[in-house]
Amino acid sequence: MAVPAQRTPAQQAQWRLELPDEAATVAFAAQVAKWIRSGDLLTLSGHLGAGKTTFARALIRHLLRDPALEVPSPTFTLMQFYEGGAYPIVHADLYRIAQPDELAELGWEEAAEGALVLVEWPERAGPYLLTDRLDISFTIDPAQDADHRGVTLTGTGSFAPRLALVRAIHDILGASDWSGAARIPMQGDASTRAYERLQKENGQTAILMISPPRPDGPVLRAGKSYSALAHLAENISAFIAIDEGLRAHGLSAPEIYAFDREVGVAVLEDFGAEGVTDENGIVFERYAEAAAALAHLHGLSLPQSLPVTADVTYYIPTYSVESLIVEVELLLDWYAPHVAHVSLTSGAKATFSNLWRHVLRDVVNAESTWTLRDYHSPNLMWLPQRSGIARVGVIDFQDCVIGHPAYDVASLLQDARIDVPDSTELRLLGHYAHLRQAATSRQQAAGLAFDMARFAGAYAVLGAQRATKILGIFARLDKRDRKPHYLAHLPRIERYLAKDLAHPLLSELRGWYETHLPSLLASRDAPTPSP
Image 1 (tube, rainbow, N blue to C red):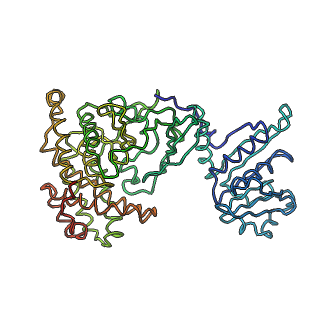
Image 2 (spheres, one colour; image 1 turned 90 degrees about the vertical axis):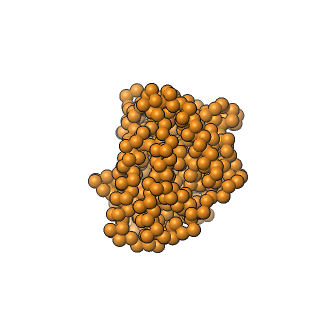
Image 3 (spheres, one colour; image 1 turned 45 degrees about the vertical axis):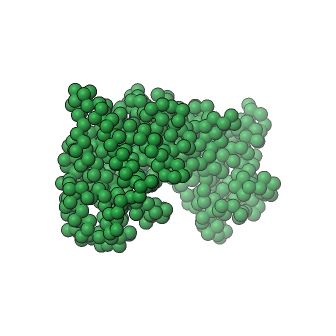
């Protein structure tokens, strides 16, 4: 297991660095330029000649991509303005300000709106100085060379967690020998996580995962937010624990080279870019191996808690009826009003939830295992250099719960982002069932005998639950998060839902959908195309 970085809460908002010469100050400015943005306030402190203007000049030149740009000190003009970059820049020197009210006469608030503001001698701004800011204080040490500068960064307000994250990334890259690597942003997923590919000059790569603690949302019911009710991972501890657990049981999860649990960053093994699909759609051999990996995992007796560090244990939550219900209700809150343009009565909503509660109760009380929840093509990589189920690299599992094994099988075979033809789905489902049944003697001894008929029912129920949830999530991503490209997947998910609702266990629920959301099921009953 990777060794976690050691931190204390007091360090999260402050960071001390040594800059041995002017070139180091210029390089430091280039690094700061990568994580500041429009609307930020940077205050520059230090005695005359400490390096404030040198830093500001280097930062402005870097942001405007002009290393020869003339950047005069604003000592006499008080404020200098720069355009041409991603956002306006205001560079102010308040040394000659006698009273803070003079800033109003200069049009300070209007100039600062939407701009990056750099302020030298910020203490003279008085009440105009925002709480949310980054202070960069430069000091001169007489015992060092003339160009040596000490610099202390202090983040206050909203800048405190941002500075903590930047420092954590800096420290963890250094601890894992990746400090000099190029950082290449990667396409993210539907979550708040971000990823970068790290690349050394020798071509070696790794993945930087940035997953800060999830802020709790508004209370939904029983004093809990949606994320708490649905058991979405609140921090990186879940990823670390499940990653090590999967690797211990023969699955390929990324090796963790280093991590900072408190801030939420980790350096991971890079599985490359080859997935279980290609330009023609799913690759049967790869999907079959992904199904085999699930069959292997589901045939094991798995613990409900896993170590994160020597003194921290992660307890895997249970995928309860209430967790499953709060997910399907996303359909009522987002898909119905914003996609189907249907206004549902409170009675219709209550009936919907009660019908789901009835069909889910038996499923939740049946066999259980680790349910990874996002076991589908975007999160499965193909590792041809390995053998057997280890050829399937699993990269997303931090929302793992204790749930029915059929959930992940449905997630794989009813892929929300790519068509899985009906004939292929049945072949893969049979492949999974054969592997489970082949281990019957061992499973019976452990009380884990596989019952295909029961499994098929659970597969339809949880497939319908997942499709219903995803329809709500993708509608929310469009309406709330301004990510309309997810809407392109809705017809596919609607087809999956119609197919699952045809199971006898779901006949009453199908009636509800036909009555209240008829457009959802209209013309959705045709099978998906075969290859």
